[in-house]
Image (cartoon, rainbow, N blue to C red):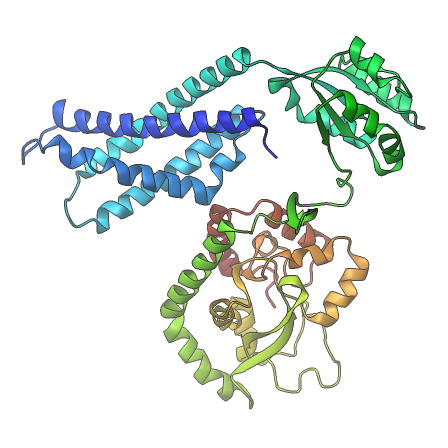
Amino acid sequence: MKSRSSYIFSLFFIGFDLISLVLAWICAFYIRFYTVFDSPLGIPASSLYFKLIPFILAIWILVTTLGGMYRRIGLHQSRLGYLADMVQSSVYFVLGLIAFNYFYEEYRYSRLTLLIFSLVLPLFLIIGRKQAATLSRYYRVRQRKKKVLLLASGRGLQSFISSGHFRYDSELIGIMIPDHPSQQEDLDFCQKHGFQTFPPCRHHWADFFMTHPCESVVVALPHSQYQYLEDHLDQISDQVADIKIIPDVLKYTRFNTGIDMMGNTPVIHIHDSPLTGFNCLVKRTTDILGAAIALLIFAPVMVAIAILVPLSSRGPILYRQKRMGLDGRTFDCLKFRSMPVDAEAQTGAVWAKAGDNRATPFGSFLRRTSLDELPQLLNVIRGDMSLVGPRPERPIFVNEFRKEVPGYMLRHKVKTGITGWAQVNGWRGSTSIEKRIECDLYYIQNWSFWLDVKILFMTVEEVLIGRNAY
């Protein structure tokens, strides 16, 4: 969760980015029409260009929201991270503006102006962000810092210190470490980072806070030391009004954590995916539009395959197979049939691997080119799957892998996909399950609209290579 100063820091960046966009557009207009460039049709009224500014700002906000750029802005993001976000967002923004200009019927804006704008925009953004950083530093210097006592040990202590958030709106007066077997390690850690430590207070909290006045106490203790907190919380709350408790959930979670309410009871989500709320709407809209467009493009190919499949072997055109999807629910995954109807009559469910000769000759072609997966576009339209996500597995294999691979079931926190981060990195077919899960969890943790776009483009290359497709 971001601190108040982090939110203000983000607002500085957003505000200066929007100002930079406006100034860059105005600058591009004057460079195009009032410098060395010819204007055979004359100089247009400036109002024609300036009235486009609200649309420019709207496209920028849309692009950065889909890309999650401002969500990632924090007090500790590196300069390289800022630059990478700025370049990526600028490229997508310019493409969006070009697309808007193409479909905007009222007036055809100068393509040279758009080119100049795309060239000067990064410079204005860099200058604007420099000013935002300067203003945020001034704000942090001017604001009054809250004095904080940290009551912590072990993993919670190290995590809090490493985060560094307290340095900007708080002054850490010291760290109190309760007695525990690894206390000396915590003391060494604090000494290494230059923090004052206090021996654990057992009775006279009023005397302690009179000697070491503070306005807030942050508690970051492991479960094994919660008894200390329970024994002393009443006394602490009598002396300090602001008490924050960081729950010990780090060892349980691989995703983001979140807090919800069930009635009046707070509930902590330890596996909270970024694919919730507005992000979920964005992904679903993309899935429907993308699948509909793909169906139109591949309709002739799918019709041809539908004719050739029954000619290659007797049986239905489509093969329906139970797969496990979101939250462990099963659905019928559609594929063009590539094997004889009785291919698994003797063997039962078998994992496809190199040298598998069960497919028909035409079916082998479909599997090598991944064309057998095209009917899954219908699964996407129906809502069973997404264009991008972890590949769905058969329940029989899921029950096997969940026992052997740590974190396997976490991949079912999102809808399964036709393609995914694991597949475009070569982990498909009979390859390492552990590596595949690692890629799936990376995708869920780092999801963004643009990551989906990247995976879709990488899928085209992967299909052409045909790596591990059998």
